[in-house]
Figure 1 (cartoon, one colour):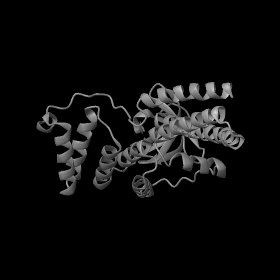
Figure 2: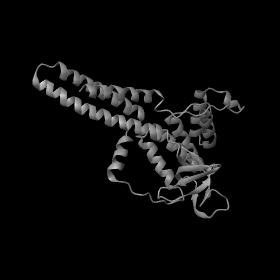
Figure 3: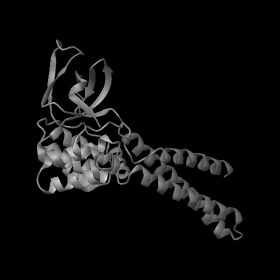
Figure 4: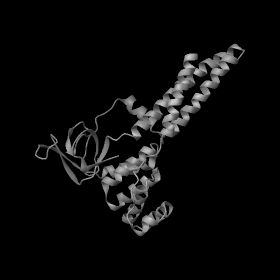
Amino acid sequence: MKRLTLFLILLSGMLCAHAQEGADTLAQPAVTAAPEPAAEASPEQLWDRANTAYINGDFHAAAEFYEQILARGLSSMKLYYNLANACFKEGRLGKSILFYHRALRLAPGNDDIRYNLSVAEARTKDNIEQIPEFFFTEWMRGVRRLMSCTAWSVFSLATLVCALALFLAYLLAQRLPLRKAGFYGTLVAAAVFMLTSWFAMGERREMLDDTQAVVMSLSTAVKSSPDKSATDLFVLHEGTLVEITDRLDNWCEITIADGKKGWLECKTVETI
């Protein structure tokens, strides 16, 4: 039991370190705003102007105001979500899918984002059948995405406190039934702690994953090798999700949902 306690404390420390690194924010590089009148406004003023423009149907202006907020190094689920909606209304399908995915990384359990993303993806030209996954793997991923990294971290730390309290009860209790309850309760709480810690680390790993990308060009040919003169294998269109598996100079090797692979120019995609 001493080894179990030491293991739980060490794992808790690791989890806290991960949570403190900014679990639910995607840092954007600070960029100097263009010398426009709106650039001198505060982020709150830009937010209000963007929302007003969106309500008035000026989706291009709304998207520009939201992007100016991003250029100042600020980000949030609502910002990405509103920007995605503005881009979708404006007809920029690739950008809207990109920002829906970024919003979803910060709020994986948000049904509104998932629905709007599905609507946007239904507008893409590429009809790619995804390779089916093992049922249990897909089910566990669905459970993990019910909450964000921070939420799972808080949940796991709460179960750790319960596990330590129950273990203390096991050590100090005089009556046998209480000692048994403390012992078995510690085992259950420890198991839940490890599961929720795994969920938290999985969400963090997925949130920071830079291999997922969205095609930004209206259409782009996927080559057999990183060379413009190479054979065209297939064509992808704006909004299609790809996974970058390798890079060579200005070329990216990508894999799509049905398992097909090829090379395309990195400038035609943008990482999530």
